[in-house]
Amino acid sequence: MNITNTIKEDLLQLVRTYDWSYMMSDSHDVWEAGNKIERSIQAKIFALCVIHREDAEALYSEVKEIAGSDYTDYDVYGNGLKYRTINSWFKPYIGE
Image 1 (cartoon, rainbow, N blue to C red):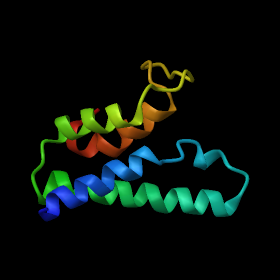
Image 2: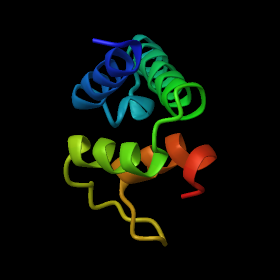
Image 3: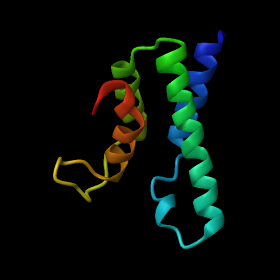
């Protein structure tokens, strides 16, 4: 397996197990752990999109598929917490 595939598999596994609401926790330890994982996800997306020149749109779609259906706390753009978070991760690469 090459490095790109390893990074991508690591990213998708982090998304599968991601705590989408960690930032609302009253526990600093939970918040800190979630924040660390989110930074790791963002670093992997950067590595894949910028360094390894992966297709950001395709990766964005794959991450959304892995994340599953969105929550129903919709913003003015019709996105719940999951998709708002994913959009923020990919904004530098696809402008969502």
